[in-house]
Image (tube, rainbow, N blue to C red; front, side, top):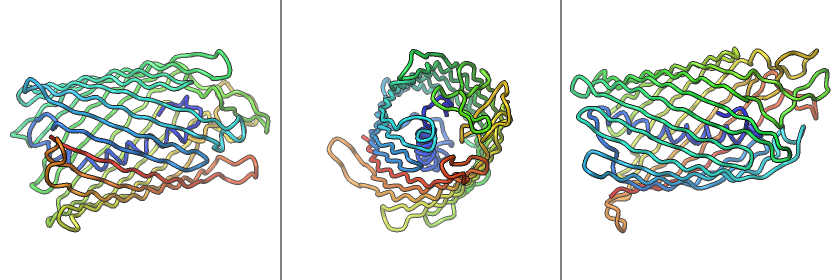
Length: 374
């Protein structure tokens, strides 16, 4: 998540939407571990809506995937956020604002035996932030499809700006991933993932202020941040069209911020062609070493970003997916999904300066998406 967003809730929304989508697809992804295959030709359309903490984010997303020359597959995606913000950060140190973010991505996959190689590019643009990200990855299936080893690298070039001044700075980001997936029993699959991220440049927020004995001063961040994260997840098939999924993720960075994430979910066929899923996610983190709600004096680095504070969050979600059997125009089959997530954020050392109370808020995420294959 970019630390330079004018309002962190919008970034939290994108993390939440991505996390919900990834969780929904995780069960399908592990099934494919038994063989290296190209993704099916498909078209996906989604509409998402986030409302919470004074921030509203809405927009559509789409992705097209098409194979060619037997061993290759290409995809293109488009994602839009229309953001209207009057969050706690904005109303206490700036003016409410509205903006639009557009993201365009493309990728290419090459299947060679039991190896799947991919490259990708994503460009994101808004009025005060530009981002270009390049990725490459490879996965290899071993032992007759029982094990899959994957490695990936990504490099990001970001430009940070302010809409009301000529401020302009850069962020460079390198991301390394390593993963192992293993079929443990005919009904149980587990994955182990590791990720390291190296960031350098302007990592603060040009709009946000810190406080020294109640007086507002510009935030000052270190210009480097290295982080490490490890996650373990498992999916177990329970029979009769039911499955359970569990996961844990640990995160630590050089700003001394540590977090833990626990995820639980269950899915079941409730009738022919209808799958219901319930999920829960708990997240907790300790504050960065240079965070304070109100500093007692001036320090080299000072931040009052609530996303660097100590806080907990809970997310409860549900999803229904209908299998649309039979042809739909040019499509051979399709599915329609509706999802809702309720999120609760409780901050332990970040106060609402308007009333002096510890800050907390609820948010809601709605998603509707259609997937079609041909």
